[in-house]
Every structure is written in structure tokens, then in C-alpha cells.
Image (cartoon, rainbow, N blue to C red; front, side, top):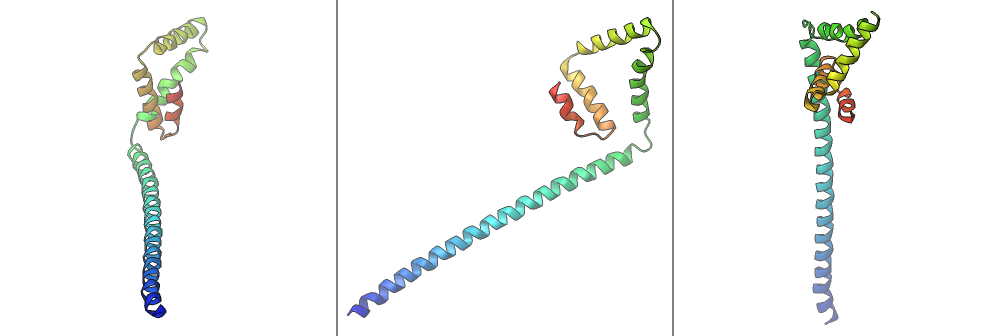
Length: 128
């Protein structure tokens, strides 16, 4: 009689343990799948950034944009060495730029940063 009771209870307990084990295995597999998916996304994101930078560098090989910006940024540098007149022109020019709308100042920063492929420089312009 005791055997008659123990058999079904043992089967019930065994089934419960088996179900719990399977649930834990499924949960572990789900976590592993999520981690693998996140890793693939990170790799894909990094690869996309590198591809974008390579394409931008190739596209600017035959462009005068970089040279134009270097020349443009050199003008104030040269003017400050031409005497009081040049320093006054440069100071007034920068004062005028400071009064430009913030979106315009930010846009200039982005243009320069993208021209020279300096993605991290955009962080600098956000702080200002």
C-alpha cells in the first residue's frame, strides 16, 4: 500500500523537478541568445561606423573642401600678425560669430569635424 502511494508521489515530484530543470535550461538559453544578439549588434554598429569613415575618407580624396577650410581658418591666424588693424578685425569677427544663433555655431563645428573625420570633436561642440 505504501508503494502504491510512493509511486505516484515520486512521479509527481520527478515531473516537477524535470519541468523546473527544463524551465531553468530554457531561461539560460534565452539569456545566452540575448547576449549573442547584443554582441552581434555591437559588432555591426562598430563595423558600420568604420565603413562610414572609410567611405567618407575615400569621397574626400578629390575634394577641395579640406583645403578651403584650412585656408579659411588660416585667415584670422595671419591677420593677427598684421598689426592692430588685423587684431581688431579678427576680434570683431569672433565677437560677431559669438552672437550668431547657436544652431549656426553648432553647424559650423559639425562641418569642420566631419570634413576632417573627427567624430569625437562633436562632443566638444556640444559642451560649448
